Image (cartoon, rainbow, N blue to C red; front, top):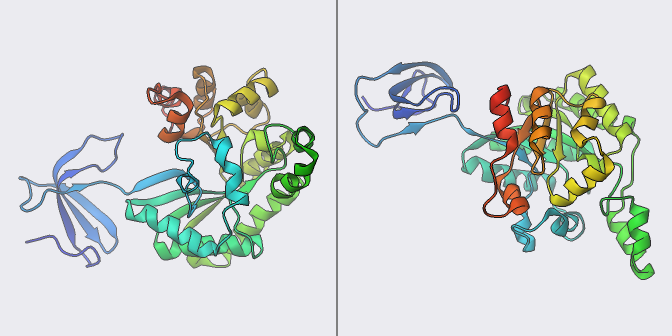
Length: 337
């Protein structure tokens, strides 16, 4: 009897290999997966390899760090280039577009490649409507595509132009350029309480639309230590502790960020995050390309998660990049990396 359609009650899938829990359990040869509607009901071994094309069955993929960008850095001719050379153009050169279409395009592209769960650090606001309406448009796109997302509300209150105060950068520019650069790139900071209120408002708006809420987990999304003041990060740490919401943040993505962090925090940038109460299981740090073994040890000991990006790793170190210390430390401490 051949395997029946997945949407048929009490159907099954026969596979030559089953990866039920990659990384935790070995591959299982010759298995039958019993389905009850859209859910897996049971798995049983088969005596022989199923007839027909050999199937490898595994859980859908997870993208632990994404921005739901319709346009990629390669669109700007910046593939493999340092972040600092192209990031400003995403907010100043690329035109805004319908947020639903932007999100749906990006999420559908992921779904076609087998990804059904994504972390969306929403750092590129399209504009043209208030923030809550735009965030709900992204949630509708996730529902319509059929993927689940973690939506991190991006927060920043400093260093919009470079890795120092905006006025310092503007002073170094020709006077004729200062006004235009400031208008495009300078940060219009909000108070920490205002940032947190946006997260609370989005969570409340999603609760009023259950068909969207089941597809979205709201998170705090400070963009990175270099872009967030200590008062803002401290407020996020306290709010995460009080509400139980996760936190998603970039860390040490480039060489320049590593150099800045060493100067700004002589005792270590991760030690600073630990001191303000931000390190812990609720925190996921994206990239961590410039993390030292000592830094990775601290992160792992606090059960933080690191979502690495091989492309960023190669930009940092070159084509013969070393293995990530976060992965080795995660294995030692049995946490995710």
